[in-house]
Length: 118
Image 1: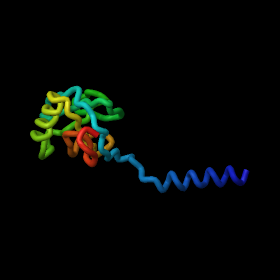
Image 2 (image 1 turned 30 degrees about the vertical axis):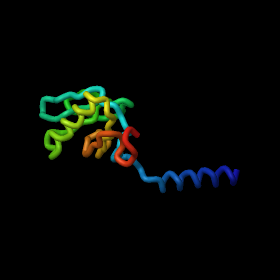
Image 3 (image 1 turned 60 degrees about the vertical axis):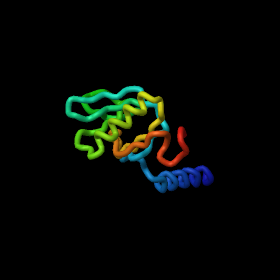
Image 4 (image 1 turned 135 degrees about the vertical axis):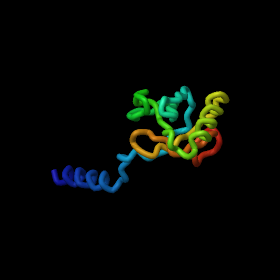
């Protein structure tokens, strides 16, 4: 019993020590752009493969869409890069700045830190 309680206490301490991703800030895996939607407010929604989940997209497109909002300073550049990736089949990685999957940055050609295609 003592060993069991010690295990539970160790797990609890470990869980507390691991940084939480509650804010959702993270890079996506190298992904294929499968759909781009220009929404009524001037922003963009993007669907990737592998798919995202749990997002709150603009204009009600659902939990599989990341969003670039119309006030993003690089909106036009991100839109152009998403279109290029979509048309060429090149993989992208998106930096999601919060748990709603708001896009902050993107990399075309794979992940932000890996070699091309990874």
